[in-house]
Length: 118
Image (cartoon, rainbow, N blue to C red; front, side, top):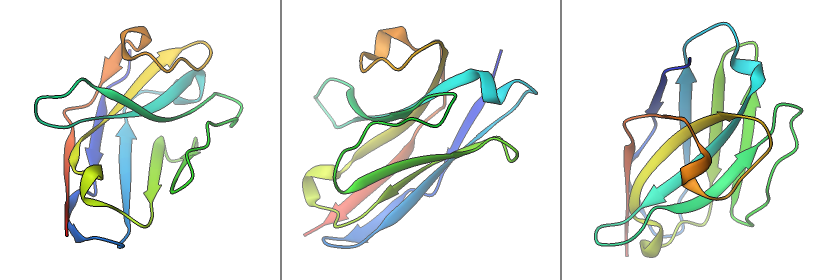
């Protein structure tokens, strides 16, 4: 089992950058595929990025996911932010390969709010 805690959210102007962090408990962090999702008010949870146990990751242009297995942390670097990126961002974990559907992830953090002003 793994527990996830996100941090790094906040208010940023359009065009700015933020780096989100997700710290995980447990000694088996390296076993997990990690994902970032986001949910805006009134909308479904949306896949943002994921990184596998071996470090292979999805690519989404302005966003980059990375992991530090020694530090039990996964990051989401977000550049050139836009108002439509405003959402609560969630970190999630699963054992196995990358999936883009949130239902495949077993463990979730509490979320961190990202607000991009125009």
